[in-house]
Image (cartoon, rainbow, N blue to C red; front, top):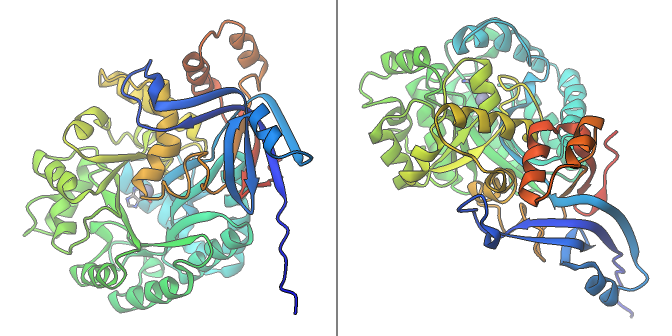
Length: 438
Ligand code: GUN
Ligand code: ZN
């Protein structure tokens, strides 16, 4: 009997290729990336099989379909390491600092996610927005409701997206309708892990929201989940706002500091993502560094909520791993370009300079490394999944005019970050498939 023969089709994606190899050490560090003026990526079965000069690819793969994006830039899809799925209708809520903002807007809106039909509708918009902004992988908090995580993973699977998410665990200091219990949070998280973690491109993140909304008993449950599922991520919030820090310390008086609340329950480690980390002490930084935990910088959110200025150079000098994220809906844009634009401005106020090569590294390979996913995403290397973004540096009249004076790649990237947003995203591929992002 003859076996089945699978014929995979190959696609060539042609344009100006930018692929990071290492973290840039300086603004003119040309060894950290490869740039090919007339380059191409060949894709087969959802993966990149080659990334070279166009002529070399053409010789190897004759008579295959070519998507010609010249003169646009081709990069790995952007990665957003912290945002909230149930906050699509919270963005731009006026006039509050973190704790009031949570109580007055966020906890009101998240209650709507008890309804699976609402979750389904919002999941459609959520992934449309991510893709439109060039984001192909994200790490999301869902609401407390299991249904919200179900809707999230179902829609991500339908679109074949590599996504990381979890339902938030929260059993106090929130409206009754948003509180689970230690046991139900364990049971629901466990059931979601068993169903979704490792299924297709999905990963689960065990998600105690933050110390203020979890009792010690609930953090014990989170600890048990992390112990039972060490390959899952753990995500929470840490040291975002002074009132939050004070409240967390009142609630956990035996903890040495805010981070110690999470340390007491063994929640630190290389797969642990801590949103914000603005006001960390020396001891907290040391513990983050020693455990390989990741501090996630959320610039638009930190400015919008008046939370403070992230000390990126300081944390990195102390050996803390960092990542960058939108934090929708405390954050104000789905765009990783806008996010890095605001990061640049925050670091200006700290007298730190974020060079454009490092910005583009951070939203691609840097964030992939923070998630330990660099073998799958964040590069255009052969073997990587073909999640790709195509950027048009002349997307608007103002950008096109500014491009007339741009002379180097670095200048172009900085202009793209400063002036660009979703209008600069001309095409997105997911596992080699061109998406309809209009
Ligand atoms: N801390 C706890 N929950 C949240 C949230 O939803 N957004 C932000 N920015 N901080 C938080
Ligand atoms: Zn957050």
